[in-house]
Image 1 (cartoon, rainbow, N blue to C red):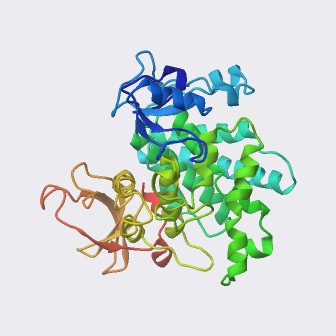
Image 2 (cartoon, rainbow, N blue to C red):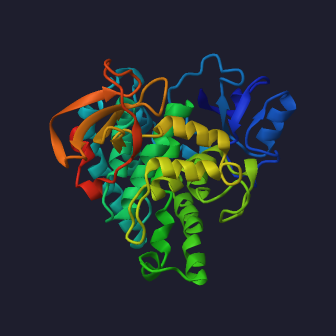
Image 3 (cartoon, rainbow, N blue to C red):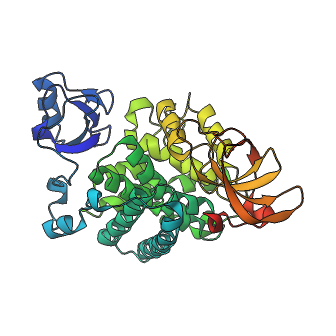
Length: 409
């Protein structure tokens, strides 16, 4: 498990998952390392690092540390202790829900998150500071939804319309980032911090001239250079609020960096990009590819994952890409798929043993072009006669069949 601790609790034998600071601040080759001796701890303290993230699966744990919220450190002392206590989420009290039960709750959370993002970006346009408390509450709502059912919010993200892309993209990247963080074993505070960074990762676009940001034709080289400045603008905006954690800022700032140095704004390579920066880079591209834009059609998740995997030898962390694929599934819940039999179905859940054989709710016969009067489920991991006996041969686009998959979840 990945958890946040103060540096005064470090001890030899621990494994630092992330140094929780910019690569320009620390003297180490990468952001993760084994704590082999006391001199490493002294060097970390000497360079002003106050909190780090450790991986208890790769090294020692702190005996009395748990997944509760850690004290936020000197940077966050101005945020009241009462807010921290009130906002702590009781994991044990959250009961799992089916996709059908959670989807309605997720719709409300998404609508409220949309209002929050719109308000934050409107404030930026007016020259006001980010209201961190409303952002944290929104991220916590998303986190709770993910804990109840990891697929509901991420499913809604893929089914959104083209309007208000920027706002919806921010929410979807946040939901995917929190879900991926849960899969990676992040503790509650780290999931919250990466969620805030993900929700605000494109905040700097509010400083880009609208005629460039909203242009529907191809951008000139000069215009593209202007667009790329949004990450610098975003970093400045986030740093103006002392309550926003360094992890949130770094995560947002590095979402366009690539392992081979081809990204921006700093052309960082390898481990000079933080672990969370490497993760959000994958998610940002995945969500953009699987979303319809005014100037480009969306592509199916399988094709998007294939494109990302092909770049995992150069631009993306291959291990993280493989884990992300396992997290979202090759056929994510809510996907509309075509079966070998000619039937069309909506993916209901993933099979434990094989990502290529999910549970499908059959709703439409493409051969007869008629809806199934009584939709039924088949588990593709089972044999014929035992509830299976079919296989997926392709994706279907909901727009072309005028089907709303969320109605069948």
